[in-house]
Length: 161
Image 1 (cartoon, rainbow, N blue to C red):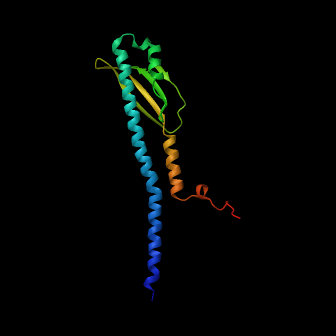
Image 2: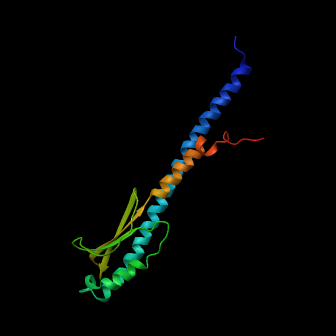
């Protein structure tokens, strides 16, 4: 007959192992999903703000706004260099590039666009692209640390005398 006192620690160890595995997988996934939402909202809000600025310029000169490249480039250069800094393009209604600020954007990418308006009529759009690589790297790092990977937690190479 089995001793009930010996099966209890094994059950607790098994439960603890399953709990650690769940935490090691769940925390990075939650971090990534939350980060994705924050990145998306930040990029959408930023694109909307820049669209309003460009739309104001369009409203001042609706017939010739596409040819005000110096002012449009000036607006694009004032877009700050934040954690989601990336490429920004201003497109006319036909999809032709009117002005752009091109920067290298690593894969994976997130793109958001917003219409440009002139008195309630869509005359073009602004498109912003940002890299999600920092989010992916941080999520992978969190997963690696959460699993106790030896690449970060290796104490066997430390010698004491």
